[in-house]
Length: 82
Image (cartoon, rainbow, N blue to C red):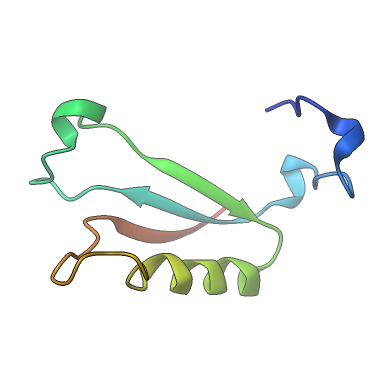
């Protein structure tokens, strides 16, 4: 994806080929949001190092600080590599 204002970046983003370690985010089969996003919805996040990916995955899997009591995220996180 192109940056809208690349002159404002502190540093250039890494080349896509350098991002080998990823996280695929999907929804469980019974998630009601599937009716809105579709059954094939997924999102991938890519990182240059395994450590960066694993740290981000731990953060994504933790309970959100502003969630209501009893709320749990209904996402599935899968570590992937190219």
